[in-house]
Image 1: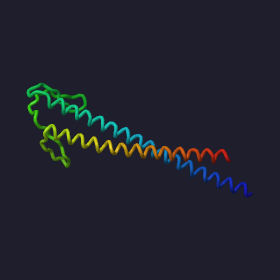
Image 2 (image 1 turned 60 degrees about the vertical axis):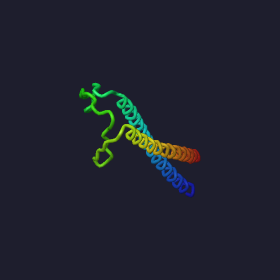
Image 3 (image 1 turned 180 degrees about the vertical axis):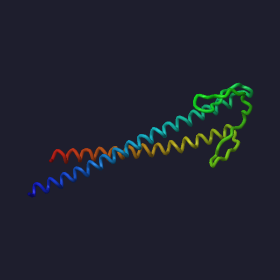
Image 4 (image 1 turned 90 degrees about the vertical axis):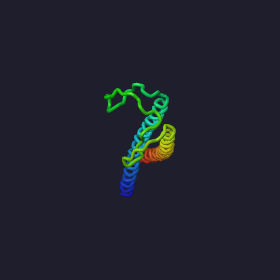
Length: 144
């Protein structure tokens, strides 16, 4: 009878460890998705930074294509090459020099890179914890 009680306790412990493992696995997947999103944001900011540099060097009157939506463009001539209109939040748009816009983009990149570093650290810690739980789980199952 004592053997049966121990087996039920062991089975319950195994189920609890497995549930913890599954929870960690879900959290790890979410962190991976966040890391992918952050990488896309950084890539987008890099593209914006490149575009700002190219437009700054483009002479007035140069014909350019302006995207209206995915795959839809407007052909127009560049009229302003000294300032950009930048949305600074809450639908407020201000005029900024190319240099100031570049500084703003670089600040955003730094903030996102810092966030990315923290995500990577959390991901590594969670992965190590998940591996530890997996080892414990395997040990528990093999003892049974």
